Image 1 (cartoon, rainbow, N blue to C red):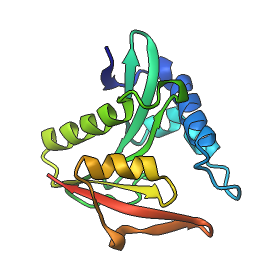
Image 2: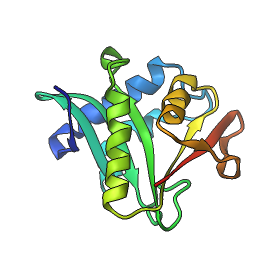
Image 3: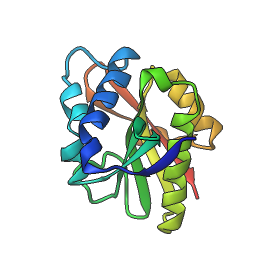
Image 4: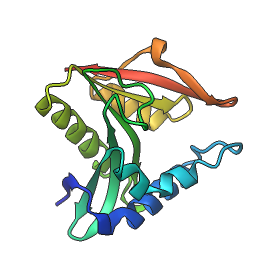
Length: 161
């Protein structure tokens, strides 16, 4: 059984490696920016955001970063919104519902915190993630689209709570 919970400091290295592997092995990284450095720095993220993990026993299967609007990690979040970033599932655990469980945990957390909506951005070329978000009720928000690099187009999504 997979459990979603707050990440523990002892898991930061595993979280960083899963994040880097998930993005690299899926082909979701741009050649002109070294985003793997950011993905591997789970400890740095934990100083400014909340990290959740999906675990089975002691094995970390996936992770997601929760961001408040005033965090240095916020790309889209405004007051009343919870943003999530860096959703990653270990490649060997992919397509087993881990990603969906993590997103559902984010939504539950946002509701519990009284947020108005959950927001995220996703690379335009990442169709499986986009299908997951849309299946869970997220809607495109073109007003939130942006480009962190010349060849990277991120699409904004929001779920009204």
